[in-house]
Amino acid sequence: MSKAPRACVIGWPVEHSRSPAIHGYWLRQYGIDGAYEKEAVRPEDLAAFLSDLPANGYVGANVTLPHKEAALHAARSADVAAKAIGAANTLWLDANGSLQASNTDAYGFMTNLDEGAPKWRETCGVAMVLGAGGAARAILHGLIEAGVPRILLTNRTVAKAETLARDFGAPIEVIPWETKDSALSACGLLVNTTSLGMTGQPPLDIMVGALPAAAVVTDIVYVPLETPLLAAARARRLTAVDGLGMLLHQAVPGFERWFGVRPEVTPALRDHVVTTLGAA
Ligand code: ATR
Image (cartoon, rainbow, N blue to C red; front, side, top):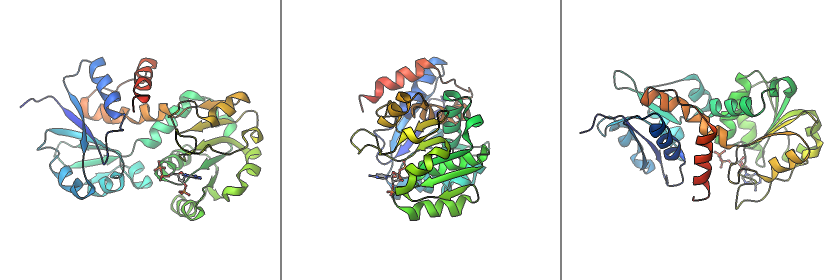
């Protein structure tokens, strides 16, 4: 059997995952004799699959829907981000063979924001986050860690936003979905974590023009790359940051753990992944 390190992405379904395109690109770029595969695993089979990870020759894995919470619980230990977010997206085996968990989504989001809008901290003050799903949990963790003093959180289903506010505490203030437009004039950062604006979904109805001139707008939707929200922001000369960079940057820590090289997110990687988006 080959000793080349192997990692995989575990999901159900898993076909849509872009992770193989990212990690496969880096393996080729750095000339690493390793592999990155897709593993379709049913929820009822996840625990057994993770126990068998080393036996199946894997040094670690990414975890996608619907396994992120279960993966956190299956791990022997988890880092601060995974615990705070309540979900894991990156797993590896330590020197003793015990399963470790991390969540790199907040890192990916923040690194993308720093890269696309280097001055966002200067103008942020108040941030508004739209949505209260799994992605919102990761982004709230990232923003709070970055020291954002006030975060207005709004979601169609208000109870889910209130649960997040209870979990994350002080900087978060829940506002009704219907009143979000009137709060925009105070916000230096607007983050869409909902699926609105994604190809096949309804558009996000929000008055981008009510934001201050120095505001930054970012969307985690990356199909299409230029969502109607980002296009509206750019039309008003606001700084707009697309969601693809979050996906690329969240992959960096896992690759480094499994294959021993900290990979770079380059324009060429981005172009490569963009070519796979249309084929999904
Ligand atoms: P993820 O884990 O990627 O964040 P999710 O948990 O399915 O995905 O969350 C999707 C988010 O998009 C939720 O905030 C959802 O709002 P609800 O909590 O009210 O369901 C939001 N969303 C999806 N469709 C929406 C719509 N038509 N209008 C407003 N919000 C919508």
